[in-house]
Length: 183
Ligand code: PRP
Image (cartoon, rainbow, N blue to C red; front, side, top):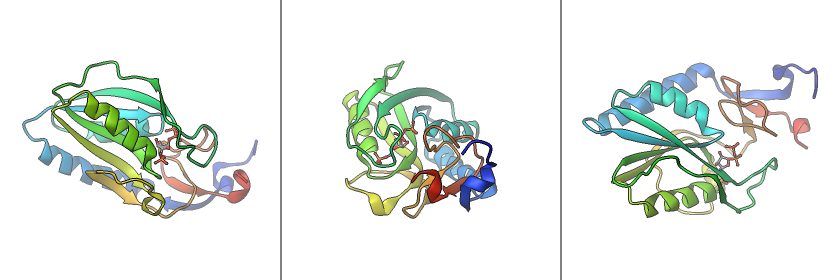
């Protein structure tokens, strides 16, 4: 892998930088409208969602604060283990606040289901969920998702926060990785 250019490792651009930025603007517009007159406390799930959350929050026009939570789910593997545990908890209480949970991708749904449960147990005033990507055909549990960037096919995608073995998060587009990079 060493020495190859990024383009040599990407089979296809699934969603371009321009498409991503346009969609993030549309989502922000919707959120600005829905939260008009309110304050939003974003909860971003580390690490994948940080890129999406930082683009999204800069397009929000209502007062906004942010906190981060980290759980384990995949490690370096491409399959969900179903094991979810908190690695980093929230820094600030969420009771009575309007919470917008921001995630990069929902796959089986196990991670998001777990985190939504934790947050609801802390009695926020409201809880909505915004995901950049939804790999809908892989879903194993029922979930309430309020804002979705893109529904995508069951391909191994990287970029815009999503990694393979911690790499590629910095790509500005969403790409499909060549199979020989991870098989
Ligand atoms: C990814 C993603 C979600 C989860 C989705 O996280 O960010 O949290 O997997 O999968 P699921 O719906 O099957 O539970 P990952 O563990 O890869 O961590 P990362 O965000 O730090 O890359």
